[in-house]
Length: 234
Image (cartoon, rainbow, N blue to C red; front, side, top):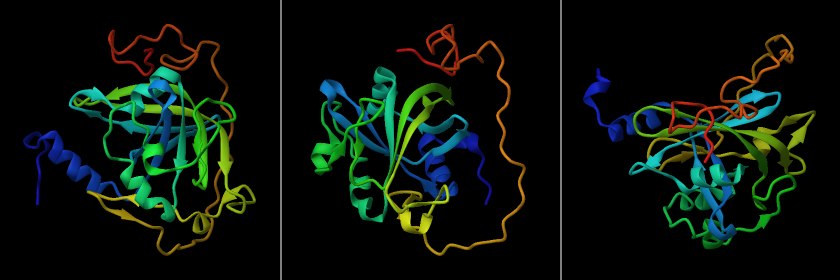
């Protein structure tokens, strides 16, 4: 089979891509909405982009051309929490994808408990085995449908006791879930361990005196209304 992308609609391409790029980890993001309500939504276009400082990235699309609540909340408050759910939380993860008005709290609807953030005002989920308190770093637009790649700097790792050993996460104990195409998910499955491959140790690169364009320290970075940029100031 051969499929030429110019012949496809955005919805058709989305269905193909989400079935091809699998499995995908799920960033279960809590953010502050209007009136301090806690918004909660899952995003599976999720990865880490830097280890020093630790940074994670999430692609957030739009609905009918409008930003989703999570994107608006991150831009408004400049912080958010990435919660990592396990198998016991799968039903709640899926249910939190349901669309609601901005003033409705998914956390309240689902009866989920929260814990206050240590370094940011956004709370984390009490039941999540791992939560990352993040400070907004940058946002970069991609494509013709308004998708934006948000990057946050991790300020605090909250890890359930017993999940970390020798500085590493015991994935089998974490029991994470992942997203497939459509309303389909998967669990960890068998773990295959291979011989460790020798790697050059990570090192810190010297920084220029002037921040890179679009970085958190670049106050002159243009907004999306001026030109494509990697930082957006609401």
